[in-house]
Amino acid sequence: MELQFPFTISVTLLALLVYHWMGFKAGGARVKFKVDAPATEGPDGYRRFYRAHINTLEHLVSFVPAMWIFAVLISDMWAAALGLVWTIGRLFYALGYYKAAEKRMPGLMISFLAAVVLILGSVVSIVMDHI
Image (cartoon, rainbow, N blue to C red):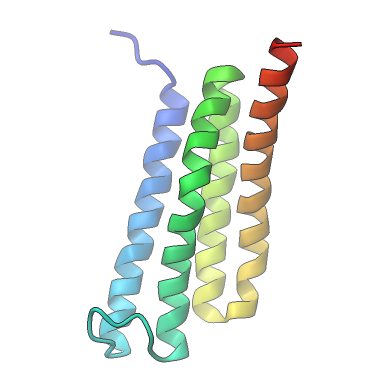
């Protein structure tokens, strides 16, 4: 059986691995800063790890379907390339956020722009195919 969308599958898995890595980092911060479950409030250091993880979850909700729609409508390779940019952006986002809240913006912008291209590219493809 030939694998369809191998690049998009690979990047989807990579994005999920990054998300779970952030979850482990947030769990480690919970221990380090002594924030007992189920609390989500705590010292600033803890909240930065927690927010990096939760914000990435919030963005995954639109990123993953956008990448897959783009892959189906336009290109597996280009969807995966943009997905890789998104994933790298999220890594920069988290690593910056872990240091200081104001250092999260470059990574956020990289991942946000990649997601916007995936969404707008899909919309343009649908419109162009149905005009």
